[in-house]
Length: 321
Image (cartoon, rainbow, N blue to C red; front, side):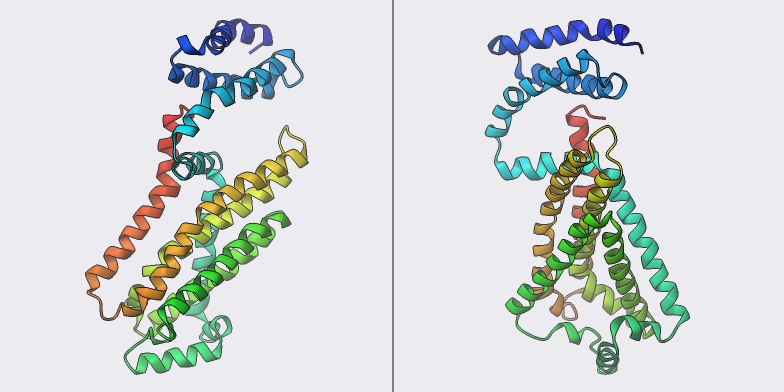
């Protein structure tokens, strides 16, 4: 569309917004919010097709001027945590959804590579898991308690130790995005293959069902969270490699900020995973099987909903779809 036609088509809407902004007490706040979103859409279009035009500068100033007044009161009315987890994070997950999808796809590709390698090479499990772990686990399987290696230590000590380890892994995945995303990919390969080898190993020794009960009670949140953290790492890498119309440093700052917010959102799931491993997983062999799988099912549904479905619902609420 030519710039003149673009201005003519949208001029009345922009004037309506300016008048509504000057007479906020007479204008429905929700109507102003909807107009603000339309202004933002027009700004994105103008930045794409008329980047050096005065109309782009005008829309940018209009959007900046209105943002605080349109949304500040809404944010103040909301609990800061509710706003963060139920609005801000889902909107960012929607914005960067392709990087989260890439993270899932890459993780499962590596996972299947790990499965195939374990089934085709008898020594592969020892190379990945270590001789000590394999020997000890084989001994536990013979004694009828395949998951015994995870039941040592106190509940509290296990909880703290596991949380510390998992948070370090997640932080490494996130920060490694600074290396153009390649560092994140390295950690994903390492952890995806390890998970696959672990499952294949127990399958080979007829303890697959025990491993499902004993690992995925806490592993659902743990592994899913790591995949999201890896996605945050890819966002950082992409902000460096693909700045688009922005200056590279500006793109990088935005990418790091948004990725960090997504990373922060995984911390509660990491804490819950550590709690489950410290206080629930160790009793899985004494728990009813149905209860184990109810916990696993709830964990999978809840975290999948939060990162894969809720972003679309929130985006629809904000008229971004």
